[in-house]
Length: 411
Image (cartoon, rainbow, N blue to C red; front, side, top):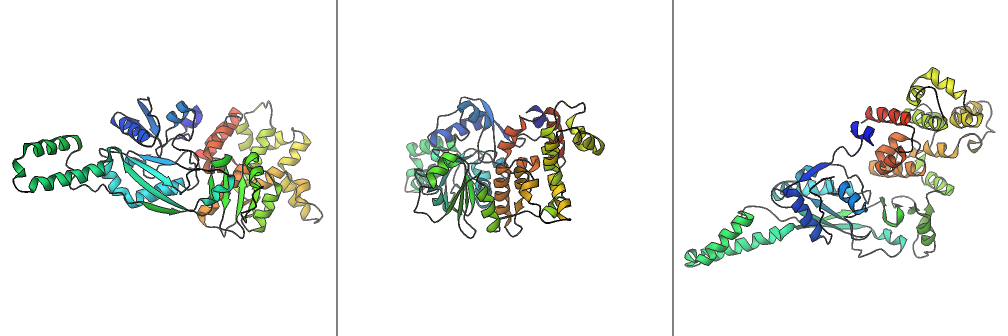
């Protein structure tokens, strides 16, 4: 990963945590029912997730109490607008944006000497069946301060009122209580520590529960797509929900998404795009073995590209140039079929969300498409970074260089 780190493409916006902030973070973990970390320093993202703690615990979702009960930790206002690197749900980033939009000023004040535990409650105690994910609708966002600082403030105000009554201003016990509270918590009288609960309504989304599930609600008929075959087979036994259920590798899924005007693919248009060139070069790079020239040079030099294209196996050559060959033949006769000339995975990768979809639904469908066919390295990086990092490790070093340079010029 060193090359990605050097290029600022690997979790480059994490925040470093040490000293007093570690203590507050541990108090949050304890308050949420988790064991505190023994690390003296670590980094966090926008939702308070730490890659170092996740690695130490061998649990990428250590902030969850089961799949149905995720949490967040806010210990610094710098978390505002920071990425959520391993979101459990596709809407986690939206939730954090909403929190900072509504409570940003209060968070700035509170995190001077406190930290905030965030409970994302979708009114589900636990998941039991795969289609329980359909229960995700309105999520209640609740907050709790470590040391219950908001409750301490109320006690402080009550004690001040007692101090003002009668001759209590000479009561040494009250003096000592006020001084002790001030030394420990400071003067809380004018601080606004009340974080009202928020409501967040979900529509279509992705969740990592049950091995990964897409819930597409906002279309003709709700569609549920499972990444895990085991949970897909369990879900299709359910007869109580009026939804279409697919496994992500089923060919019928693409047909249904096209029928519902969720995705589209106009080969004559897409062949003119940079995205097509990226996908073609990905397929080409996979076919190159033991080359005399670095792969990144071959992909960027048209003369070398043609030279190596003519050296590889004829079947690989047909697969790489399938789209262009199909369009050429289509000009002569319409008897040719896409399935006969274009590689299935390449054809899937050339699809895109329908332009009628709103922006956040387009992002969700891009993520689904790159999960089905991860042939576009740029979109894989944009829409599923964890999968990008995993796939990246299997690539030829020279192709890694090409991808890093390409993405660096796009971000």
